[in-house]
Image 1 (tube, rainbow, N blue to C red):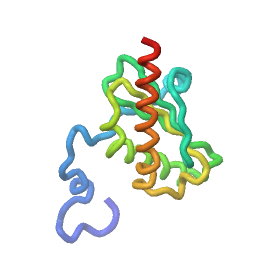
Image 2 (tube, rainbow, N blue to C red; image 1 turned 120 degrees about the vertical axis):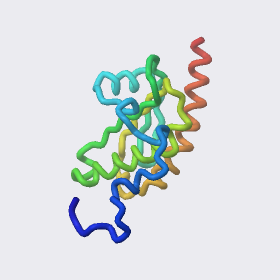
Image 3 (cartoon, helix red, strand yellow; image 1 turned 45 degrees about the horizontal axis):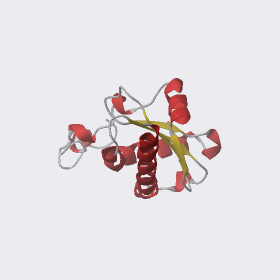
Image 4 (cartoon, one colour; image 1 turned 60 degrees about the vertical axis):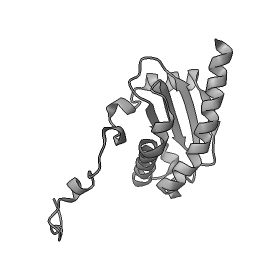
Length: 146
């Protein structure tokens, strides 16, 4: 650890985990990593565009939990900005979006110009209504196919 010790004697990395529940984490089972998975979501899913993001949503069988894939182009900014966008998207997914999705849902979020200036609550406020609309469209599309 760098810097002076905490005045109350607590380790900062441990204090951030107070109140941690298993449902509140963002582990490997929640990530889309392979290119084939990204392409499958784009091919099978539905698309929605917000001011700062393009979102794809698809139902994929055999998943233990809802999954998130992120794509942030170099056109958006330097590495620091791209990493900040990804952290905020993951946090938004972990805290509020994941609970609205069933385990078979996979989501891909592509950042657009201006996404680097958004804070986490703004990201959530932009994505939550879009996700609600997309879920109703996805259910309607599944109902039509059946």
